[in-house]
Image (cartoon, rainbow over all chains, first blue to last red; front, side, top):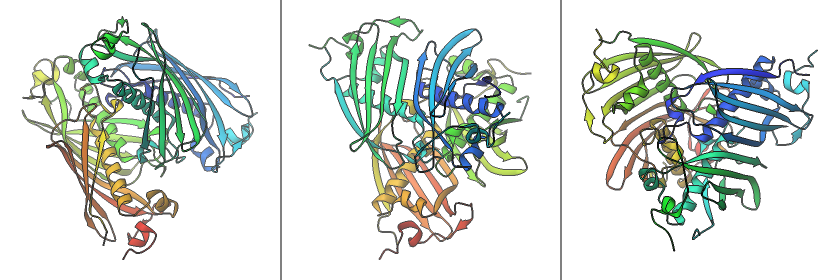
Length: 134
Length: 134
Length: 134
Length: 134
């Protein structure tokens, strides 16, 4: 079982992340979600750089997002990342992005684990943390 | 009715679009889909820059993508963009991204039309093309 | 005279900012420098979003960077931004990007101020801060 | 001696490459220059993907750009890339970015060649093309 199941991060929207409408470009949200996923993993005691070095690559197999309200340059956003489901075949996360009390977006991603040659690998605590957690 | 309902574009993956796994970063796919959508619109006789200047902004309200196989640096990709549904409230597109005969990704986006102040507007041919098409 | 002439920020390299060599893509550094410039401006009491709303747009007219050592995914970097020169015609900044004691990059940018129509404007404290500072 | 010393490419500005001022974000130019450099290399008979696979990584050690006029969404741009200097230690390129007869930017980059472990390597035709050219 994972020691932590949700994690919050807060960050400020950078100028170059916004588009001519003055709002964060939708592709950028997926980079935010990745950052949330990485920080959740770190908070759980994981080390993504080390996991990759050991030959376990996590790839996105599905991503979806509902955009409710636009985020703007200089906004301070709050991103909550939650593990929705962990199985030997995939790892699902759910994300909620907010500005104060306003919900801006809700998203979900599904990851699979592959080898450097692109073969699917079983996900285990050994894979994720380099050792089984207690 | 829209004069063209599907459009193909072909492009080469840029180096900076790929990540440490040597594959196209998943957020980048949504930028490809946007390019496909813009080119379909152009092929239909639309002018997105002009539409924005007239005060009609198209914003993404939902995006989803299934990633089947990774795209790599220097790959020549083919993107087919198709209008799935057009209603006064939204515009849906479907995308298939391929490398030769291999399907790499399948995606769908939903757009709404808003004013510069963020108010939802009705989508019409007047909005899209500056005049009704016959 | 500007109340603060140098400002330090610290941030972590995001996965999507790195390339197939596992290092931060060089174009990304300029986004970091922009973030440093914005944060220095904020620390000086400026509000870039408000300055744009008042019709003063700062555009880059020159950028240069010497890349000494690569930054990698997950690195925590320190960026020092310093105002090098402020004249009615331009605003120059200098940047040093480090990881601990190691200098990774040194850069310089020159900004000019333009109107929404692209006409060059004189830079003054009124422009930068909405009022003259004492 | 390199078989081709200059190469032109033409491409259209993508929506997500522009910022709230409606112009191409300055960091994006360096991604364009990289594309020009890659296409020049391809026109010379090189294969960058193969060169990396053989363990020769080209890294930017210096980049500089003078931005003359802004590029906008939907503009069709022309980029000319030229080899300025090739020595065993470095490879210099010069770029001119235009829209029709208007010069938008002029830039220069310097590349060095390193091993996967970050050691500097001598640049030769063997490195660049996998064999000496005649």
